[in-house]
Amino acid sequence: MNKAIKRIISIVMCLLLLAGLYVPVEAASCRFSFSDPKTTVGKSFSVSMSSSVSVASFKLKISYDSSMLTFNSGSGNTSIFKASSDGSVILVYGEYSEGEGKISCSLNFTAKKAGSTSLKVTYMDASDAGGDSLEVSAASSAITIEAAPTASSDAKLKSLSVSPGTLSPKFSADTTSYKVSVANSVTKLTVSAKANHSAAKVSVSGNSGLDVGDNTVKVKVTAEDGSTQTYKIVVTRAKKTTDPETETESEKESESESEKKLELKVGSQTLVVMEPDSVPKGFTEGKKTGTEAPVYTHKNTAVFPLVYGKVGKSDAGFYHWDDENGLLIPYKTMKIGKTTLTVLVGNKSFFTMDGYKKGTMKVGENEMTVYLPEEGDANHALLTLGNDNGDVVIYLYDPQDETLQRYNFIDANGSLVTMSEEYQAMAEQANLLIEENAALKSEKQALQEELASYDEVKAEYEASAEELEVLRGEREAVVKKAKLETWIMYGTVGLCGVLAVALIAILVKRKG
Image (cartoon, rainbow, N blue to C red; front, side, top):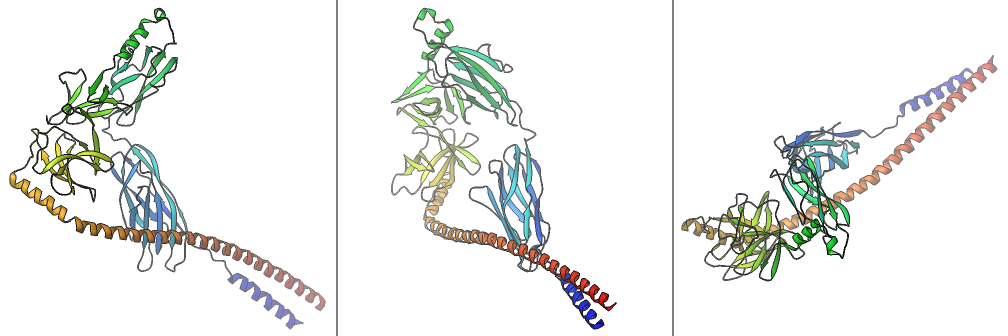
């Protein structure tokens, strides 16, 4: 009997020992953390990122608001940073050649406007040195952008007037509420408003589609630092009447002013003259004989003057007035890098260079006035553009590659600012650039092929990410099953222990 008891006890101890050795294994976890910086508009700043544990490789997709931030670059250990073409996603990934380590890197941005924004991780993956996937989680980065200390808070108007009608009370920058009465025939109020500070922006709403009775027109001024002030004009549109004797003096004055719209006829076009909020750099307000319309002349007298208003149903804007040919040419701008240039058009003396003639060409999305070679194919063109200083600059445009390169300056008299030898050197350089076009095309083709290869890698990466998600789901199911089996085993071993103890008790009792 003693042998039987000893045998049972040995079996129970072995079962308990095996149960103690079995411990379920869970995947290690890794958390990516970000700093929460504060900055000001126009300044560059960095967001630091780090991992809680060492990893062998990782991949992250981080999204951001491209209207608030511009991504500049990234730096850190084993990390590669690449912004997407739409400027809202950063791909961060890296791999250690040997072993593993903690991630520590930095993302550099430039703040574009004041407000609050954040960086958010939309995809994450990491593995350890053994190739096993880690349970990955990530925080977000809260970014606070304040207005520049030097930004103006001036949100007042310098002037405010309406047509037709007269404001009551008389305009004052500190008075924000006004009234005006108009005739029943008036359905739109023309509002002319200028900001007191040059960096402030002015917007007008509610001035069209006037109903009979009271209407509220709002003139909102946004200061450079983002602060705002709104001027309100209550416009009272009269009821329709057929009796001229019952019409008020204000209504008669309103109708009279409505009929006095200043129009400028140029050739077959008619411009309804309006007052602009600001005048482009290089231009100053002046007068032109034969018209009451305000004109804006360039310091280079050969540039056609500008007039402002509406032609037909188009939006209000500036136009070059070519009086000689009876044309109104839309005044356009184009952006090169961070610089905004204006397209300037002038008379025959504005641009004179042997071998070139005036023509038109599509540059980007705009049809523009350009200067083309008189002989041969139009494989390049010269554009006359104005810079921020109001100077006239010549640019060489390649329509095949759609590239621009600064060519030369034009002085206030319309002459090229260059010596004859310098001009010859520039011409030779232009010819050299044209001859090298074939080589550039080959390089462009190679880059396109490389980009196509990148797209294939990207597609494989996204497919791998989807496959990884499936594997994660399968792993979680296996872990849950293992946990269930562990508890079943624990229960079975416990039950066996209880039965064994009970059996031992019975045997001892029988022996007694």
